[in-house]
Image (cartoon, rainbow, N blue to C red; front, side):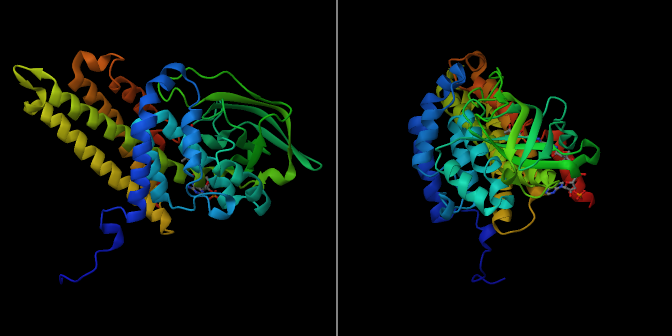
Length: 389
Ligand code: CAA
């Protein structure tokens, strides 16, 4: 090896100037405006409209959407950088932005017709309308291919009947990516994907769910009762919907890994701050090695999780296969988020268990990262499939 050998870009471990600019911009917004509102949104469960407005002004509701469709035209690394910084301040805002930026836009970008892209992407990327992704059903969670919502072609439109559950953004969303089957006996080969708009006859949004964490994420069930969807709103080919859903989740899972990294970083920041201030036995508790051990483990976890998450993002940006790495990043980062939140509470002692400090919210928010966009068990299935392929 010579001293002049190039370091491969992926090994430099520094963000480029452009990515760093994005990080600094979102960090400023997150610290100054989003973090101070987080407890309010957690308490009231109001949709974080004010935050969304700010994100829209900065072009962060369509980070990876090409400029020709009204987006910022940036890459996945920029997108995960945004989601990490937002989630550090407010995990509800993090997931709202993640769904808008990936789950709602990706199916259109990758599989939509030019007409669908032109019609819906500018509305989503500008933040004029909120998007949602409706795959899960009361009896089809991890086994997504067993969904029961049906679609049948009648002349120039499809008719949708069925129910969806746990659909993030639904108290605000106006554009829904919906999965239904034309014939359940075909299994995943029967699944079709559609764009459905709020207000169409027969489409109702149910009660706002009272969730443990990400309480302002507008999560509701949906009902489709003979909803007529124009033929041209089919995304991808007939029967290609499961592939659309899975490819979308590959990308979405990097976003949830980023959300988990943001929560884990916040837990570390809060623990460092508190342990330096809190004195017991005549010294700050950060001077005690048992506390230091927790701080060190938290720091190692968050650094490792961030590297895994960024690597998956860069692999996607380079056009490489990244499904295994996305699942690994989500699996690991969500584990770190939960553990860091638990350790932050432990370091805060009784104060950590009260709503006076934000660390109890971090634990409630962290837990969902092990559940949505595929549970940790599903991530293990995906990783095992790749390993054994
Ligand atoms: N990309 C493209 N195609 C894919 C794919 C991918 N990543 N993964 C699988 N496929 C294709 C396969 O190639 C296969 O197609 P062929 O038959 O043509 O070869 C087909 O899909 C079926 O694949 P599997 O046999 O692997 O499918 P499975 O039924 O065994 O399911 C699973 C696998 C990984 C468990 C999948 O069902 C899954 O991911 N489940 C979890 C669902 C999930 O994540 N839900 C989250 C809901 S959204 C959400 O949470 C949003 C929110 O609130 C924020």
